[in-house]
Amino acid sequence: MQEDSRKAAEEIKVSDRRSFTTTGERRTPDQPRSEPARAKTPPPPASGASGAQEADGPGAIDFDGFVRYLAQVALHQMTAARDSETGEAAAGLEEAKQTIEILAMLKSKTQGNLSPQEARSLDDLLYHLRIEFSRRAAPPKR
Image 1 (cartoon, one colour):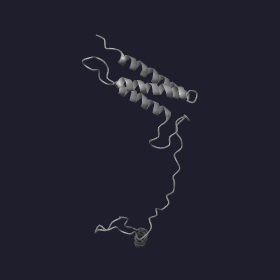
Image 2 (cartoon, one colour):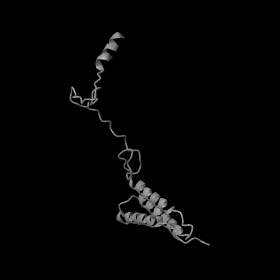
Image 3 (tube, rainbow, N blue to C red):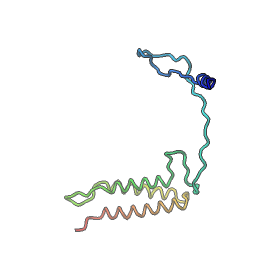
Image 4 (cartoon, one colour):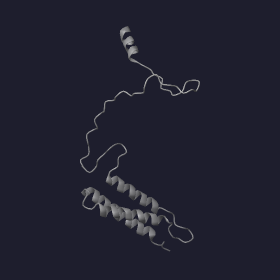
């Protein structure tokens, strides 16, 4: 057991990497900084059945996710409160209209290049956003 502790003590090396000494002076490193080479782990196998969803990392987003994000932005822009005196919707409707037009442009520019699921999702989102926009843009009933 004593041999194991000696072996472990010999393998452990502690080096001070601070740039300044305790007196505040800039320190010159004794050795050049070099990080040990790390073995790269292979990426996990793709677990999705759809080839259209490619994940490049934890923050990766696919086309369907991007379209859904833009739809959420449009809905958020439409939730502007109506003016109590005039009863008209605030300027957020113009921004929402522009976002809906961006989604329509994406639909036309990507026509024929989307998977059936992506095309269906984009069509559904555009339909529902346009209905909601027309409902909110209509003058209030008295």
